Image (cartoon, rainbow, N blue to C red; front, side):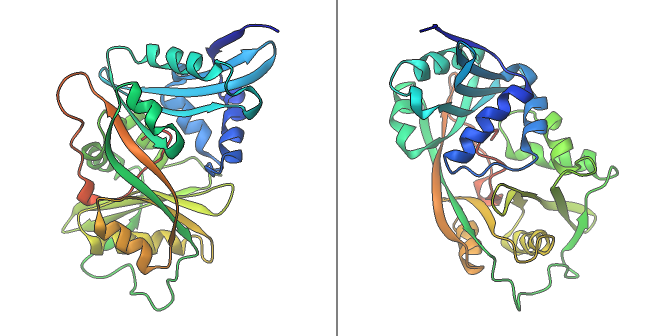
Length: 291
């Protein structure tokens, strides 16, 4: 048998890993990969035995000091044979000298701890068809909800910066203002001329996901949630809520979403504590794959 070779993957090659993620029940967005890969084209790797892909990992670099690890998958036919640890080591070497974050599935969390990752908090995926009938109108005089345009993009990117451990404008710009034909839509909240929150909804293999959902308070988060759900009436919606944000969990439950999946946000930091992010204003995580 040929030896495992790990090499950088193009977006087309990494589509295989996205399909594996779907088979694992992670329900990728239909248009996630182009913006994911473009965020750091050199941060996607696959392991090959001959011409057969057997493993994957993404190690997306943000700025000079932070990276986020995702898509760590070994094809079921090749598990327990060393491909996983080899792929992991290759990816982590790419992030040498950086603090690293990840959202770890339950069965991998002990392994991540052995590699120096420390728990920062659990994220709970709530899913279901939102029970929005009779809910208050999202666009109230106090909270104005608008579509994102080029005009607001710089301010929205600046607002987003407070919610992540590294600079990610290269990701946020196309995420909130996608090209024509991309099945993703964003809304932002405006109060007294200032951005007070924003959210993105995207179509997935099954239903939709909302992520991120950032807001200054629960009322604004609710207004954004309702406005986003209104773009996909009757669709199943998933919202990845930090467990420590009780208002976020309550929002999901109030509209009939139920827990279906969980991850652990974990960090391996280079000195000092884990990043202090505004959990109380994080009502929905952006993505489990890129942070």
